[in-house]
Length: 237
Image 1 (cartoon, rainbow, N blue to C red):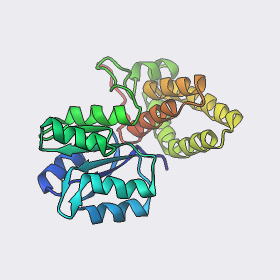
Image 2 (cartoon, one colour):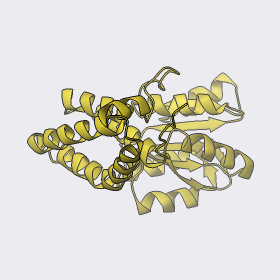
Image 3 (cartoon, helix red, strand yellow):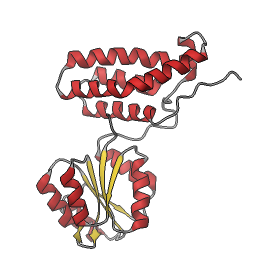
Image 4 (cartoon, rainbow, N blue to C red):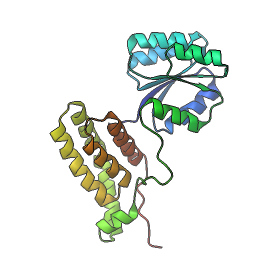
């Protein structure tokens, strides 16, 4: 099964933890939340994460201490600190400890998402005029206006999409470029039939830059958005 980035969130305050969880999930991302240094270490031991979002002050230690412990297990994920202390000395100390950036609470949700996108190498969020997940007009043209066929094909498309995504990601990981392009070719055509315009664009860009982890991430996010959506079929006005 494909998934959005996995984020380990460490925050001892329940209200802040709930807010940050929702903000990160909206990226979209999968979030595991811990309320202490010990809980975070236990979660990190159970599986890898793509990013760590760590409170600077915890009941059983500091964010800098936790980052050092986590780095002993995995040197790869970027780490962001969050703190209610806004002074320059605190920021410099956290950056010196190895955090990529420092978010000062209270922090707006859009700032959280922008910081995560930058740290994960996802680039800026799509602008308001970006391609929609579903384009009824494209699907209607492809299927001669038969809306029952559109609904049926979208249902089949979504049922098959998780397996297709797994094959694409496996081919990318194994550097099987022939297999990767074969999967992308078929998927791009299917996207055209059902009007999955955002995913179709992501498929095309991955095909043009088949070694890019950023393009693979865009493909994953576009796929996840479809799987989490309802496939609408517009009715005639």
